[in-house]
Amino acid sequence: MKKGFFHDDRKAETHVWIYLKLFAFRLFVMIKPDRPQYRRKLEDIRKKIEESRHLRVNVL
Image (cartoon, rainbow, N blue to C red; front, side, top):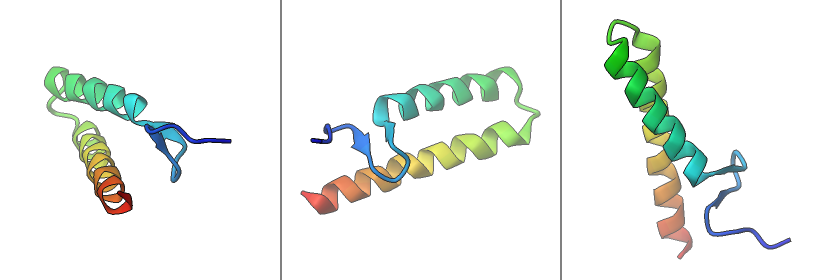
């Protein structure tokens, strides 16, 4: 089975899905800025995107 370009082996999530979650948590932070768990989740998603970019650069 050939994996697509946007496939992430670690979590088997597509990068499109990760960007959609990033957008959703940005909205949550804007709507409810007093909830720290939204900010933590937003930072986790940003770290995951940076790690996947780093992996793709090293593979190529």
